[in-house]
Length: 425
Image (cartoon, rainbow, N blue to C red; front, side, top):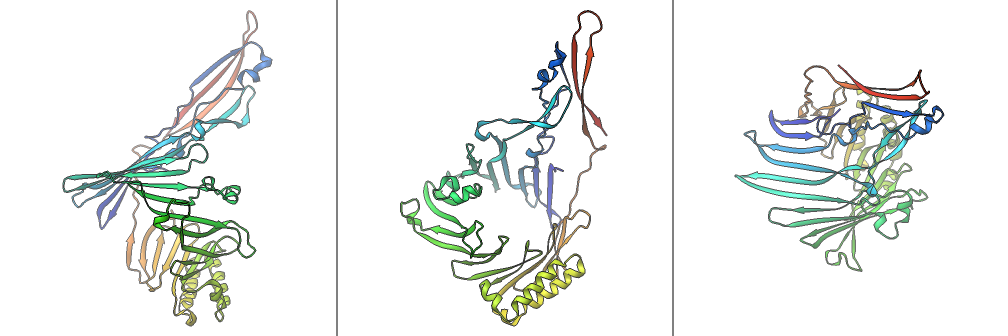
C-alpha cells in the first residue's frame, strides 16, 4: 500500500504534510495487447518463439519515495519545504537483464525482466520562508555506479554560496580491507571526511575486528576521529571516540566505552534479539561478577522469553524494576526496555524512572499513543486513510497461444499470441 499524502497534526493543528510517489506518478509499464507471428515449419515452433519477451514490468519498487515535506505555520501556510529528487542509476551502465520465467508453454518460454537499476536520492532542496524572504539550501548526492552504487559524496550549497562537502570511503577504497570484502561488507562507510569551502573540518574512521576471545565474526571495533591539522596528511593522528569491547555469540554488543572512559553494558533478552537493559558506568564482566547478578540476569532473560501478553509483560517489568533497585547497582544509570516482538517497543524506563508505555492498535499493530505509567497521555497518533470514490481497481493478466492450420491450398501454420488485461471492480 502506498500513500500519496500523509498529514501530521500536533495539538489539533496541521504541522507537516508528506508527499510520496505512488502508482499515479510512477505507473507500471503497459503490457502488449496482441502479438502475431507466422511461421512455415511447425517443427521449429520453439526456435521461432524462444526469444519472445512480454513487456509488462512492475515498477512498485520505485514507489513510496518521500517527494516533499511541508512544515506548516500558525496560519496554515508553509514556513519550510523539503523537496527530494530521485534518479534511476544505471549499474555498470546496464539498463536491465532478462531471465527465464518459471514455467514453459508449447510454443514459448516466458520471460520476466529483472531491473538492475536503483532509484536513488540525487538531490534535496530545503527552502525556508522567513519574513517574506526565501532561503534555500540544496544538497546533491553522488554514487558509485561502476561497482557498488554506494553513496560516494554529498555536496550542500546554501544561499550565501557556502559549500559543504562530505566524502565517504568504503572497503573497496581502502587498502587492507580484504576481510571486509570477503565478507561482502561493501556498503558500510569506513571513512567520512567533511569539508567547508574545500577546507577539511572533520574526519572519522570505523574499523572492524574478528578477534573476540575465540569468537571470529567480523564486527565493528572502534570509531576514531582524526585530529584536525592532520586530516588527509600522510601521517594522520587519531583519537578514539567509541571502543566496542565485547559481543555475544550472536553478534550483539555487550559492552562499549566512550572517549571519556565510561563503560556501558547491555543485557539482551527475547532470545538474544532485543536489549533489555543498558547499564552505564560498569563493564560487562564486572556486572556479571556482582553478587547474585548472573542468576538475576538469567531470570530476566527467561521472563522476557515468557512475555506473550499484558500479564507476562507486567511480570517482566516488575522484575526489571527490582533489578534497577539492586543495591549493587545504586551508583549506575540504568535504562530498561520491554517489547511486543515483531511489533515494537512496549515500554522504556530511563534512569530517572519516568516510564513511557507504547500502545498499539490490536488489529493493525500501528502505534496509537504513548502514555506514562499513570496512564497520562504523552503522545497520540491518528491514521486517516482516504477511501476510493467507487471501489478498487486492478488488472488481471490473461495470455495464451492458439494454433491454426490452413485447410485449403498449400499447408501453412499460424501461431497467434493474444495478451490482454481485464479490469476488475
